Length: 152
Image (cartoon, rainbow, N blue to C red):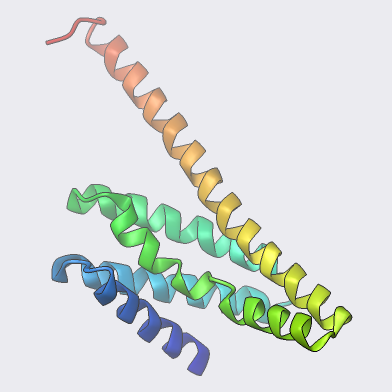
């Protein structure tokens, strides 16, 4: 529970640093809470770092797309602060610490976890981006068909 609270506070801090407007601040903090809770629950249930990060990223990407359209704001305003709990900062620190100390097995473990978390973030965002683009294409195609293909 303490992990989730610190993730929420970290999201709030980064939202302030990134100058998210006060009206959008609560949305970005809720997004950070969602990402932290989903990651934490999946990881505690035995999911790998990649799996937990991937599904948490998919959820916050969908969340940010929905609320970006509802509030008429770019989705990145909500998405970027919401990803803060998923960033593998601790694993990156420990991998470099092991590298400096000459601990090869520790370095390989933490470096692998860092790369897997980064891949989970990237692939989760790509999956949702493709789905949104595809959905927008279908909606616009049906909109043109319905209006007879004429522009107003």
